[in-house]
Image 1 (cartoon, rainbow, N blue to C red):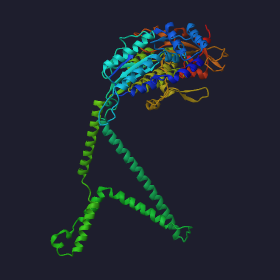
Image 2 (tube, rainbow, N blue to C red):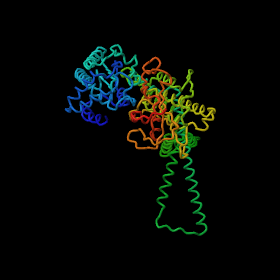
Image 3 (cartoon, rainbow, N blue to C red):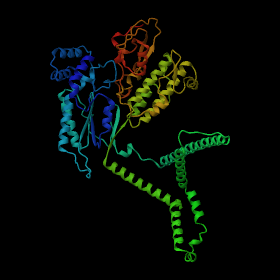
Length: 606
């Protein structure tokens, strides 16, 4: 199947639409960059199997570019034998679940290519009818149509009227009807991008003014920043003074040593003369000292008072009796003193600074007001309520929302318990790192998951939470076979530094959250590792335990399950598979999924 996917990608990928993404984060970043969104809609495709009529349309599209009947028969046999079987409108696509083939993404992009072509045609028509005004002095927002498709999920955003958006939606639904895809027209209704939220790719999107994404600093924050800058300047001045003091002490020691040697009759012979260098160095130090001295208003005020106090030459009866040259020299001296030593009044400086600060605040306020009235930015939020529901469903928290132990994990080793929690936490952080409210997800991972892990370890060893924290530390350190400490769970510093810098395409946390690997005490370890391209024979048997079977919940029932959360197929429950230590660790940490495992070679263990 991998070779078939590579062959199809080589033919169809160059002609694919630019908005047909294969990476979630790339699609989300594009949606965030859309300016002045006014209306949007999501094409709601209800859950339906990819049946024979869909396969017929797919093979017809492939046959237009691939003239190979044998290859087409091979693809047809894959669908007839259920080797490639998936559903449209579900939440299992591109989740790394074993019931999904690696060929699925490529086939879906080919199947939905007519929809992409229709959207491209609509965009070209809209661009021709609404050209962009080149005059920068005119505030103009052109009408545009933006679209994003990720497998079978389609979202269209417009910066025009609602009638235009309805027309675009009707044309897209017509193409989907030609492909014999059932569409929920009520779920595909047009919504206001400003006053309503739209769920797409597991995120919540809404158009907001720029001030919502970049709010101005509060007065408290401004005062705190001024205090911080003042403290940093004081620290820098202290370091500078310390360096000057050390330099002066070193110079005095050198001069003192040379003076003693000269007094004792020692003569120093040099191959070169350093008087000019020393003179230049001292001249530079003197100029720096004078400049630093005159920066102080107290020093200037002191010397100005000394030079100008008690001047009898300022009296007119005295000036009339003196030579004009002396009077002129005195006046020039007074002007120089006033120019260099007359300090500015403190209140005048303060008033100027306050006036400049007020003008800057007015300019910033004017700029923010204009942007809020003329621009809109797309905000992306993580569905916190669904995340909390998933946390509660998995058993991380109790009914009061506080961390609790998961008793199903008590049979695992300490390292496997920490790895399982780390797999859930890291994949949650990677998946939601591009969201505006990523801080809330950080709190869930850093508090609920971390302390649930501590409570699980404490429950296993029959100790208190404080003792577990003291033994494993806050970073959940665990020793490996060589006695070295290893950290799998993200540390608090790592979580604090995380943000929208991950350019990879993260897989959702569903597989790692809904599956637990239980290590079996079996002596026979000669079975080969079932991970693809692994020839290791030093393996350990693990049994798969699924979350939905432990809770006796149907994942298709959205009232009892988390909306959008997928689950592994029930047939995998209690299946056993041999894995080497490296791939078992990767599977627990979520670095690989069951798609990377040969699920046809499971071992039967009573």
